[in-house]
Length: 410
Image (tube, rainbow, N blue to C red; front, top):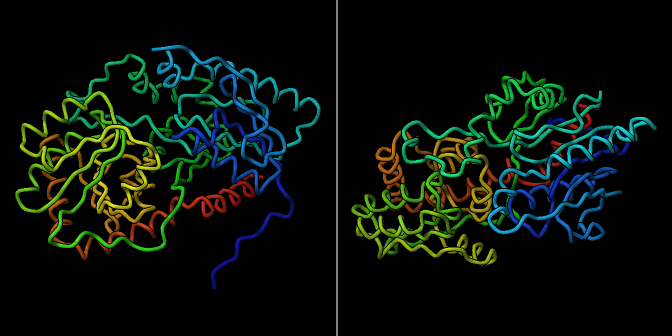
């Protein structure tokens, strides 16, 4: 008989460290909000957070007992992106949160466990470290190296994006960062690659857990387009080199010689013009459409009317759009690297190794032809995608597992 999960004897008191959680902001902020929302429903929760001025701490959308928010100023103009990438406000938050925690320790620490949910990147030390507390970190993602065959084409222009190249060195040699991971009772990571990245810190325990998940999971597999209609391929994300959009366009140009397809690209980025030129050069402008940025609600309608999610990103830490597309029953064609490389199984998609641009485009094209010429396989993979996303990314399932981890840590 299957064993039943043992419910906690008491309602645990959890201190959450969760900068910038927000139900109205896409990406990491929304994912963190979903964690805070779910944890606060199950446990007595206090949240330490930081937000730009104007954020309403009385209307957070979560059931936490207390939300302690420290405000910071948004930088103007071109510095806004820099602030988003580097999170310089985290330094002030770290000092304030650590001071707050120390004050609570002097009067008798009123929590059973500390859980720091974000930042998702592994380059930020935890204010809970070095204080003799039991704490959990994650889910973490990021710091993936560019595949060697793509490095010439993927030189980061912005100096601050090159900082990811020293993340592993910092984990091994930065005393604050190393201590944060080494002393944690548990570190959660989105895929096995995170265990390797964190190996220099000699962490105590590592468990896999998706950082994000779909807002909803449909309950019926997709019926693909009939054989006499094009197989509708979809990409959603930033149009930058590491997302592999141009590799997808090259693959479509190869595949169209053998099958009937269309390719819709949702999103914008610094390679929009280059992708349009590549599509024109390869003679596929009639079946490749770059729509640019569209409202979020419209993105969901594209998931509904497409057949396959072509997501050739080869440096993808986790992949919110991967889970979104799977939640709508879309089979995937993606790379073997990062979060998607772990999530996608042969039952629900096709993974292609990004060994070089030429080999990658060729492998993607083979995957496209395989699905375009076998619509029953698309339907079969659609059902498997729904099952897989429910298994690894359902919010309730992950909160059940997290509750077990909390109890074990305590």
